[in-house]
Amino acid sequence: MSSEPTRRIRREDGWAWLFIGPLMLGVVVFYFWPILRTLYNSFTEFGAFGGTRWTGLENYADLLTDAHVPRALLNTLIYTVIVLLGIPLSVYLAALLNRPGLRLAWFYRVMFFLPIVAMPAAIAMVWRMIYNSDFGLLNYALSLVGVDGPYWISSPGWALAAVSVVGLWSSLGFSIIILSGGLRAIPPELYEAASLDGAGPMRQFFSLTVPLLTPSIFFLTIITAINGFQLFDLLYALLGPNNPAMAQTQSLVYLFYEQAFAQNDKGYASAIAMLILLVIGVITLVQFRFQRRWVSYD
Image (tube, rainbow, N blue to C red):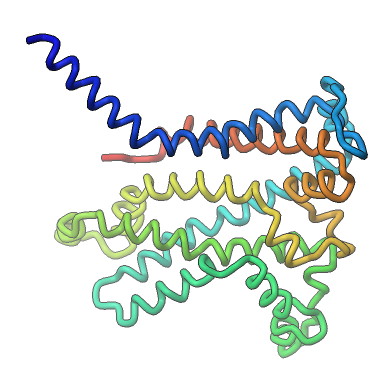
């Protein structure tokens, strides 16, 4: 009698492994193995005609002396922080789009979500025309008020800010969709009770809406920070490799690309990739460590 439940449990375990097995295989092949291979490559030097040579910690020592690494890390941090500023803006926009009785709410949601489905190269082409110093829309608007606009994407002092604005703008749609789902999960009875207690719209927003959205906001901070440290395609398409501002604006992923494919130094590029993984891991752990202080799951 006791063996029958055991066989049933084993049979259920077998079906479970059958369903999750292909997924786990994909995770191992496409995620874990590339990480382990990159870690091994970071301790080697690739020959010009193939082959590798074990160099130990030499590539990591070069990271400490390479002047491009701190600059690229700082640029990536600045870009990530600016894009994270879009989350408070998304909270406000999502609250506006979910107001009862708002006309054409679906149209506004579609307009905000369009940059998510557009290719980064297409977004970059549109914004290159906007940022154009001679006939761009932005400088034309500034000229109407007597301001001479700068060379937005070719000046080292402006290029990073220009790229960050595009990154913030293109991330709003995803954030608004996630926050809209969180807003719909808030019981309307809570707002009715708050109104009966005399709370106005602003008080309800800061004392009710924002605290109940903290799980969604926390999720967005994790995703946005990770995406921020993966900045490459937008930067490459918007500025281009021959841009005079690229040396002062390059990100860590762009530095990895340059070392791996332009300089053909794949061992050193692998060390940069492990640095990116380490930084993302540390930032994510810090976010999870401090989320207990401000995220409410009640």
